[in-house]
Image (cartoon, rainbow, N blue to C red; front, top):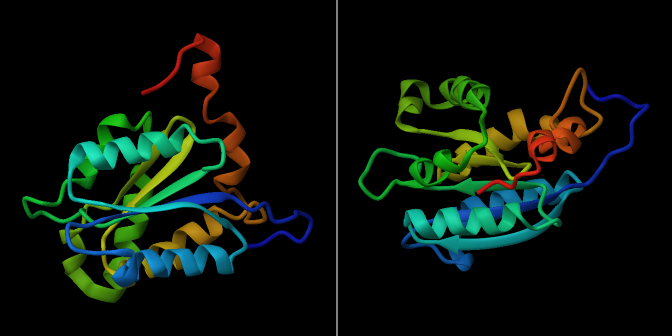
Length: 183
């Protein structure tokens, strides 16, 4: 439900495609996410393609998580079970908080579209340096499902009864209390 008494707050969203073969010219999943976030009124803060390499994935997300212009990072690709699929392994170790509910809801939505084949995805989400990070499969359909059924509402300050935007200012409370810095 969208509340008419709240104004939309645009976010800076970075899109990372994880692939050994895609380029910006043929990155349909990245294009799908960019089109949807811009249509919703958000701003593309950054976009990149990196190979299926743990260090490259982690380093890109960590860099963006330290950028004040980036509120959210969405990755696409590398969530399957093949030897090259390493995006969850690259990112889950740096999550300060893991978002198990994102994976659960993603699989529920995905099940409606592709049935039990949804178990072949290790979609996940979490928080890194007070930045939300969502790890999506590499198909345009999975990106559409995640955005249309989960992220669009949760990244909209007007969404009630609650949304991610309203808690963003509090994501780093543990760092302010201890004076520490994360990864």
